[in-house]
Length: 95
Picture 1: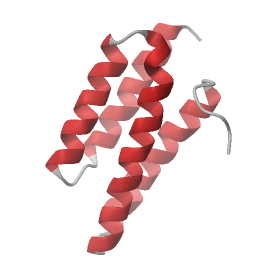
Picture 2 (picture 1 turned 135 degrees about the vertical axis):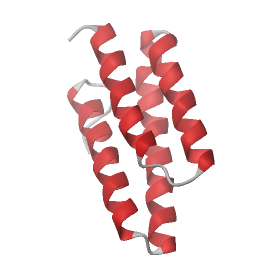
Picture 3 (picture 1 turned 180 degrees about the horizontal axis):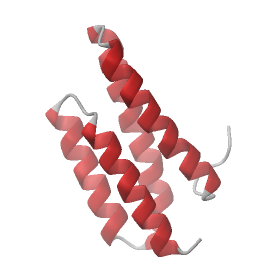
């Protein structure tokens, strides 16, 4: 895979996660991460991926705390897609 492809795919996955954000702070953070994925040097993609997963984790916990199982389900699916991409693209270590 080319580095540009990786950046584009990560940007798409971040947009999908942003679409299921339930609060403005998460949406802003995900917009910022998407801009970074699209414009920063390609060697920063691993960092963007890790921060996106951390943000998704926070979003999921927020949904659980509110009892919003539908939002949790959508957020967990989007987070899993980012994690799987990160592992397959060798941006993350498999755990």
